[in-house]
Image 1 (cartoon, rainbow, N blue to C red):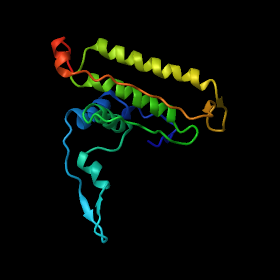
Image 2: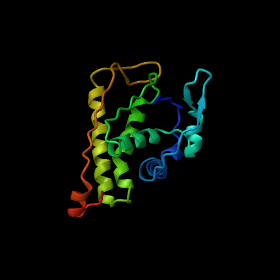
Image 3: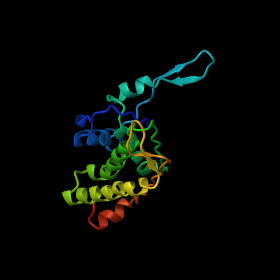
Image 4: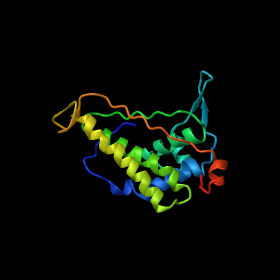
Length: 175
């Protein structure tokens, strides 16, 4: 993800409906359609990336990244990594907060889980995000664009516990 600060917040881009839309289309009701390909003069096949989003019917979004990462973890069983890059003050920290919040909420979106589960997931995300301030206190400086610019890279590792569906159903939990 390349973070770019538009210097204003666009709340319509980060609604609950938008979160559910990306999770639904890319995880719960994902349909893999073949990519449009073109054969180059040298005989190699080239995927046309511009058709990817037109086939899906929606634009690139940070929720797309988190939904595809979640899908890679849960459906494909593959470890995932998200790299957020950008200039000082570009919004890297905010982007990571958005990604972490969406990742925590995705499992609860599947069947409109109970409100207490949603509150618990939100609480966990808030604790992780709030701990960021402590780490930033040990290496930040003021720059022209950012009063709290980090002097070091950040690494955040989230670990997910994937539960066996049959065991969960035996215990009365939805998976």
